[in-house]
Image (cartoon, rainbow, N blue to C red):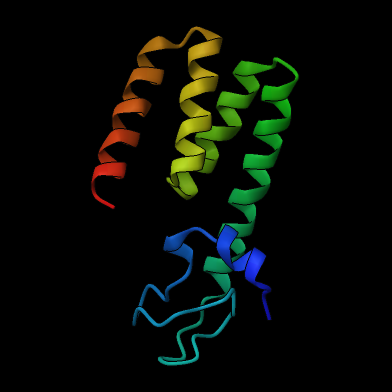
Length: 113
């Protein structure tokens, strides 16, 4: 079971079953509708790993590599954290058009929450 600190760090879109909207805590089977969420949990873990690798590259000034990893993470999960990382990495790597598009996408997703 997750502690309070870990639960606060879980993004809102990961706190609900996509099938029935029941609260979830990383389980592989939904407690309410019994949907198999194992692939979803795997994809979330993969996206987290990509984001961590992108952050590692970003911290070292490898902005093109960070942008590439962040783009892959966004393609799996377009969370605000992934979008912010992608926009910043694109900006610092000189890909201004993609940074602008990503910033607009981030603004739109923030408005829909």
